[in-house]
Length: 286
View 1 (cartoon, rainbow, N blue to C red):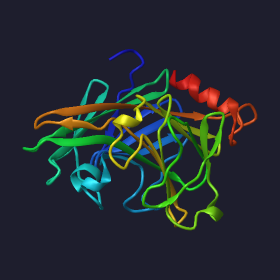
View 2: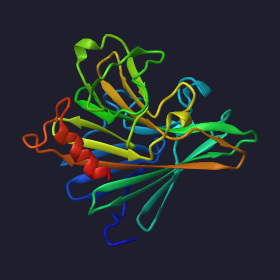
View 3: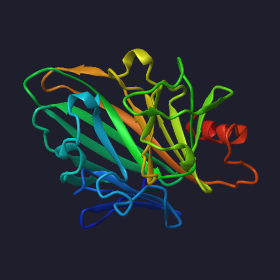
View 4: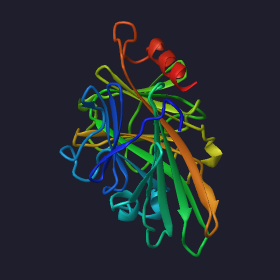
């Protein structure tokens, strides 16, 4: 533990990291789900009042065709065992029947940089080999602006209607407009540089991760996915890691770094094509 490490505190099953005006909280009894990432009390993540099942940020195994719907409770919503070692919060879930997969999550925070590091591990506890990719699903309120650098190809559709972004100087921008969302919509895309960001008002959420080439994406999935529901209640900001083969007893680890910043909108406009906004994100993830 270094001098900038933030020691988490526990209130029942809720584990919180507090640094300055920022709070990051995880509920161990709810699949180790990230339920709060807030600045001065303003949570950029949705809560159960928006949707009782689909809120906050969770991890699923990809591709979804391996399990359909709903997601396995052992991974998504059932209690995880929790422990704190120095400044690291470790959570461990049960094995999902049929898949033979279990998830472990480690959380740590650096109070000086304002970075929360999440280490996900997918472990094959079954008797058969399993191919899988880690998939982080982060729900934010309907509205705002989501953007990421485009990689190979262009946005493509899956089972839902295509959510079409604007592409400016190699960056894809989804500016939420409820009037254009008349059904569930989603986009699938290869990213570049290993980040995706979302702005809600003057709050900027950034998630960074290792860039995954298209050749390592799970079948029918993509490194970057954005979903907007027909009910106009939330948006999913999604990122996936590499699709790998796990022999029985093997595991794959994947790290995502989270940042939350308050924007000076006069200096850094939150609008489609904002070079200042892209430059800011790139300065944070470098």
